[in-house]
Image (cartoon, rainbow, N blue to C red):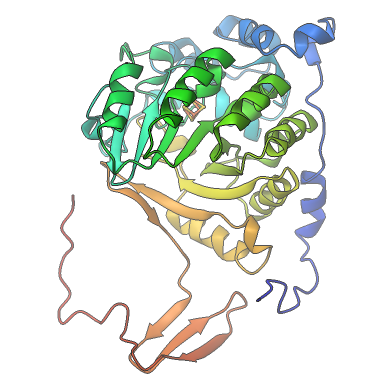
Length: 412
Ligand code: SF4
């Protein structure tokens, strides 16, 4: 078996001095809610009930709110609602305008600036939806949208047309229709429950839904996509975990973007899910002032492993309307990936992808490690930039023979 410790990794670069503090686990604390009882604070329904949802509340709790943020918050409920759980609010640094937590959940007026290439449905989900609330884009799997509500709202959300119902999308999933479609399509072996956040359903409702899906013989594999472990770790109760473990194989994709989101509360919640036998993967979005820095990214990925979560995807931010201020160049994304591969544990390295605009699906984006490839040999660059040759096997033909003439690609 090959190990991924070779060659020796050498000394940690100077950035290592920034790495360790980023990897420390801290509690979010109580902040303004220090007088609330522990029973209330740890109750996920209390957290939901006390979310920050108005510009006035936000300004009262954070007098350092900038005019751009206040104006954004005033308009948010016409675009994508403002909502932040008290727990998550405590992670915001009110003195840092570029705080990575603040960037993710506090609206800005820039959300109203849109470019011609931005879209309300950048992944083309609505055009791949055979019944309301179901997206069938890939051959063997479906996306099952269960709700349009989330514990808090991410300002870069790909489904902002739908979640929070701020724009009147009028989302009414029909579980009967969605389940009937899956039952009638034996090619569907994998069902991803998402939304909105499926963990906002009560235990009973979620159990009933998972049970109905499990009863379909050709559904091999169930997945939950949830931001709740980071927005509302209180929701990950022992009772929820005991219920979920009845439906294995059940995987969960969580969503975290910055090491500061991985608090002791989140680590404990993820531990409860892992103890219930649920394999955990993380999906991050590459975001300006959040994780567009190789050291921050590395700390986040290593910290995820410490929380028993495998970094799964790193998404290039979708072309969602009003997200330009949060997007980072693909060039920067590739640079960051180059600083990860070989420089840290392979398990820590996610796949960087662009969800092809308009519904083309996820396209992997990798730094160029294959410099050339012909019938005799492959020329490779390793993570240190050293060049190696690998003799091609006798039956080998180049993966991508050079085109006879360069043709303009057809844009879809
Ligand atoms: S939790 Fe997910 S669905 Fe909800 S706002 Fe964030 S990215 Fe969108």
